[in-house]
Length: 600
Image (tube, rainbow, N blue to C red; front, side):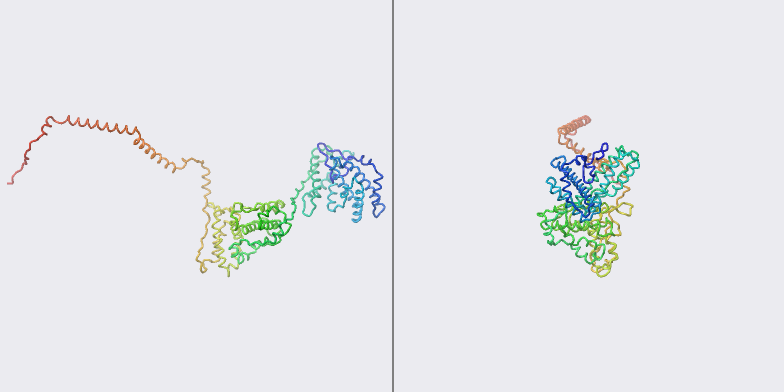
């Protein structure tokens, strides 16, 4: 009989690996099954090469058939139906184990399996179970055997106190065996591509169930008190596995040709300059034709009605194929370098395919589905192989190409200084390339470099740009001697670093109490005061000129002046001598007399 469950634990559901004694609590009922003669008669049909082995096979057959007959009674019982399949799976393992243990040949084992199928098929109640008896592949059988022994050791630990033996030694032995068997199979849940998913799902479920049972029993067991049960190491999480789908569009798209937008810069400089450098030639590994394969499984969301030219699908197929094998492309390059190559190759592909029809990346149909392919494949990578691509959804499609040009320039800059084509026949073309790069350098240095006062270095804000002045295109311009070339009428503008930020001053300002009011700025205070005074005078003027109170003030001033004039005239009249007025009237004409002396 199966041992009792530990306190606060629940007996596991019967599955393939729990063991026959764990699955069934009905051994007595099984042994009392009816129609024994019928069972014995059926098992006589099984024959092997040796008489002794025939007897063993018949005993196994009788035992298995008794269980089959007993469990068949519950076929239509909803509470038992699910268990029948699990019992049969275990019996199949049990049969495989016996046949392998007794060293029967593989051909003989296959014959015995077929005999069992015939016996089961002849029974009306069991005919639907005949396919459950089959040969188990060697690797899967070994894992099942290890799992079975794991459970056996666990239940031996639970029942050790009932045997009356040396409890501590026995318990220690079973605990060590349990941990040892667990370590053998703990990584079984990390599904590999060449494994049967359903088979390993069964084993993984049993292992996960065992891990939970052991963990609960560790803290609640009453038996095996003198032995501390060690912690079990956690097993790996299942590897994400996607279902491969055959893409109906593949054959149609694989024969489609496209004229992509190859810019003049690429035509002009790539062949004669950049492709002479090994670092740049690594991009060619992304441009092979191996992506034309029906194994591409992530591109099913591409809508044919939108992608009628297959552009998005073909790019998706390229992305999937290249991204899957990215970390295997070159063992001499680290993951960051490989990821950088893939990122700017992707920018280049998007720019070539969509720059003629779309301005911004977000306008491209299916762009999110394309990036989702990268996301899903990334989930299948181990941590050290993950590659996080900056999708730059707010950027213009044309800017992606410029970003790649800048990235490639900084990547090959040191090599260009020693590259023979730039010192011989292609010097003029190399100088033109430096001129073009300098224009991009000027465009992006402001957004990509932040420089600080009293510091010789600038901070890089862009992964496609380097702020170190040794990468300034002017350095190559001088190295190539471009200023000495004939017809060099364009000249060359040396781009300086952005204006430095005085970090110390900013720091000091940050220590001052912040004031967001208008009165914190003296200029605004002075201007506000001046306008306030002018405004006040204007109000008084209007008040004086156009209001009744102003008119009344004017009348008072006029009356006051009249009164003052009257008073003044009266005072003048009173001060004048009497008769003066009569003398002034009709004065008599008189002769003017002048005194003089005659000259003697």
